[in-house]
Image 1 (tube, rainbow, N blue to C red):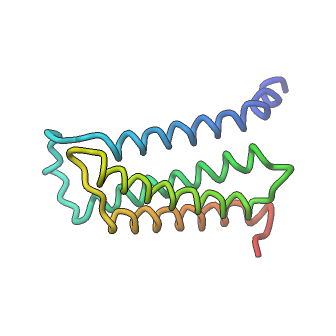
Image 2: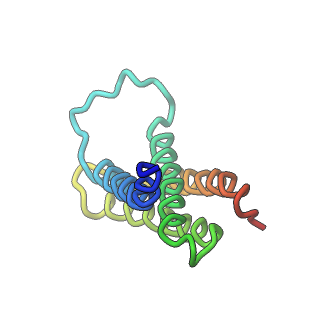
Length: 138
C-alpha cells in the first residue's frame, strides 16, 4: 500500500523528468555533429525524416502525460494537447533555425520541420486517443 502511494506521489515527477530528458536528447541530437559516424548500413530512404517524426511524436506523448500530471486539476487534456502541439512545432522550427544559423556541420531543412510537425500531430492524435476514455475530447 505504501509503494502505491509513493508511486502516485512520484508519478508527476517521473513524467516531468522523462519529458525534460527527452527534450534534452532531441536538442543534443539535433545540434550535435555526427560527422564521422557511419550510417551507410542503414538503407532506408529518408531515414532522417523518420527519426525527426519519431523524436517529435515521443516528445508530444511524453509532454501530454507530463502536462496532465502537473495540471490535472486546473486544465483538461484538451489544453495539454494543444499546448504540447504548439510547443513541439515551435521547438522544431527553432531547432531548424539554430541548425541553419549556428552549427557548422548541420543544415536547417524545411522537410525536417514538416517531419517534426507530422510527428507532433501524430503524438497529439495518440495522446487524444489515450485520454479519450477518461475525458472525451470534442
